[in-house]
Amino acid sequence: MSSGGIYVHIPFCYKKCNYCDFYKETNLDIKESFLCALLKEIELKAEIIKQINPRTIYFGGGTPSVLSSIEINRVLDALFSIVDPILIDEITLEVNPDDIDALYVESLKLTRINRISIGVQSIFNRMLKIMGRRHNFEQVEFAISLFNSNGYNNLSVDLIYGLPGLTLAEWKQSIDIVLSWPVKHISTYHLTIEKGTVFNSWLKQGKIAEVDDIESHLQYQMLVENLKIEGFDRYEISNFSKPGFESMHNSIYWKGEPYVGLGPSAHSFYDGKRFWNISNTEKYISCLSNEKTYFDFEVLSEADSYNEFIMLGLRTKQGVDIDLVKSRFTFFYEYFISRIKPFVDSEMMVIEDNHFLRVTEKGIYTVDFIIRELFYND
Image 1 (cartoon, rainbow, N blue to C red):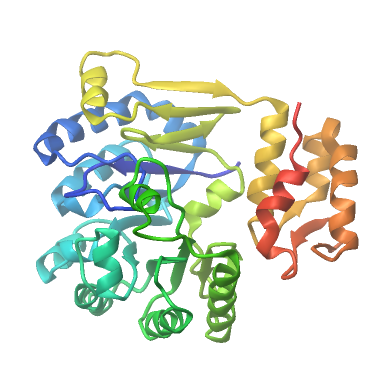
Image 2 (image 1 turned 45 degrees about the vertical axis):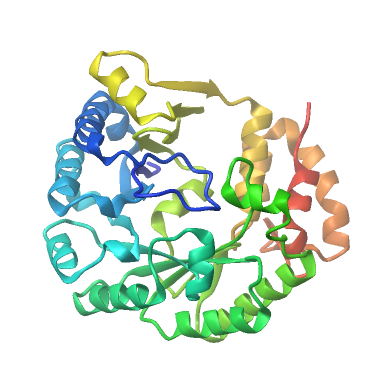
């Protein structure tokens, strides 16, 4: 039986960062109403949650660390009334460094949270200010020290590269400092300037400029090389871990396994369908309070399923299982084989163990292009 995951979206933020286009809610006065609606959604999805056989729970956001340990346990208790907590291997909480103090960390020990993901983003206070982050570098180091001293040995940090004005030397300094911390997992993302963000307005006004491709590639290459030296394995294009500390939850997404999303804007995938909740907290609360529909869905076509299988697989270290393409997507198999040939011939991709297709170091910087070339378009 395949295993799945549960994602809990906590939409609240004290403020929205200048680069962020995720759905967030700054009105914390409705937090209690949100929690009641969330518990109602869990009740409504009880049979589906059982069906996917979850082994992970992930509190994302937004800023999940706006929740107290009591509020976290209200959510977990509702989930554990459906699934046996013994069967859940990984429970992750995303936190903002400025929410963390000794009392909060101590209180978390009363929950079953066993993995902490810390939104660092940058070690430079000037960059954090430009990004609109609430925390500073000193708060990051304090939070990491607190979690480490309290027995949380599964720590992950998020970093953003390709930031306007970030030099290669500063990026190297960032990597060195992160490697000095007791963290087991590092997620790194290249800045993408999205429509509707403050950064997009600044870009149009000429206040900031996007980093060019050469600089981006140099920063990523530096990251990969330095993390490899220190024993971090790149198991997905943007994710690195020490052995045994890969994100179990995110791996569920990349393997195409089922997951249930809870909370406003959360997505789910099961039974060949993709679901998404309404991206408005007040409407989400109202719909669940009045027993109205709070989500929409689509049935994935064979082409959609094939394209998603290729995209997710090629981002991982293991790559795409060619045998699975043949057995699960028979109609697309000959097309797939014809499309991969030029990339294999040019050594941008390689076939290992006779059936695993993966992107090589030569092809890693053009992986998005490769994926698009392998997609099937009607």
